[in-house]
Image (cartoon, rainbow, N blue to C red; front, side, top):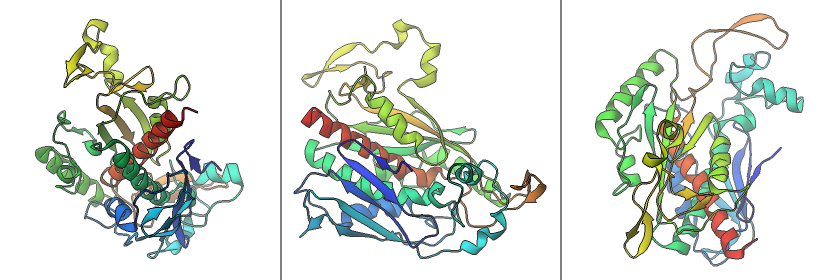
Amino acid sequence: MSSTFGTLFRTTTFGESHGRAVGAIVDGCPAKLPLTEADIQPQLNRRRPGQSKLTTPRDEADQVTILSGTENGMTLGTPIALSVNNRDQRPGDYGEMTAVPRPSHADYTYLMKYGITAASGGGRSSARETIGRVAAGAIAEKWLTVRFGSISIVAFVSSVGGIVAPEIDPVGLTRELVDANPVRCPDAETAQQMIAAIEKARDEKDSLGGTVSCICCGLPAGLGEPVFDKLEAKLAQAMLSIPAVKGFEIGSGFAGTLMRGSQHNDAFVQKNGRLGTKTNFSGGIQGGITNGEPIVFRVAIKPVATIGLPQKTAGLDGTAVILKAKGRHDPCVLPRAVPIVEAMTALTLADAALQQEYRI
């Protein structure tokens, strides 16, 4: 199983959704970085279940423990082991689903690949695996801040179902502004519409998908490794590895195909003593390398596969059945996906920055 991400800043996640613990091992983090659990916990708090009425009621504190790799609050340059205990486990909720693969879930494909599946909750295919990513991403972000100074990586919910937020100005965008409402959309009016739609889907035992946008500011030009490890290619890999993600676009994305070159080209201009671009249809990356403008991309996330509505499907023996899934699941994962997108972005950027420094 491919559970490791990164070339120099490497993260390996471990654990199953209803096992004893989940976590990550971070290898390649430079030494002498100030680091304690307090640097990691805030992002885990934003990801954890049970934080609002819009999320699963599974009650987990998701408290992280650093097992190795630090001493007296400083990284040693050795592997950093991060562990989060699972406490609110209910494997019995999944008993009747052992013979019935859930529609659009990974139950069937994992069984076909490995010949065995975790007995409950999806195991490694569960979004609970992302705890390790978020913990590791917090370390990557801390190093990026120390290395480059004033950088920001801010993701937010930009659509839920057919409800789309207006374009957000990256100037002044903060995580505090994003977290001002439980759906994590910085436009207050749109957020209320999203909340109502999610509550309606939840009450009807159904689910909704949408998009998460991410804006990264303060990075230097020159990061990225053409031709096969272009930065947008690595970001796409990182985002598409997140459970439930079905699409990725950067800058103008698919909308750019509707424009002419004369409209789409980002003309160069002087900006605060450096060369910048007048527009940013490139999304901050040209030729696979950062150009110093904000990196802007969007991630498409499908509706949650496990729903409470009865569904006509088939068991592993091919017999037609009606499946009414049990368990505790989000009616919309978008709000909790925000810190996951930020974490995978930080891991990608930290790896790219280290590759630029060491020129491997």
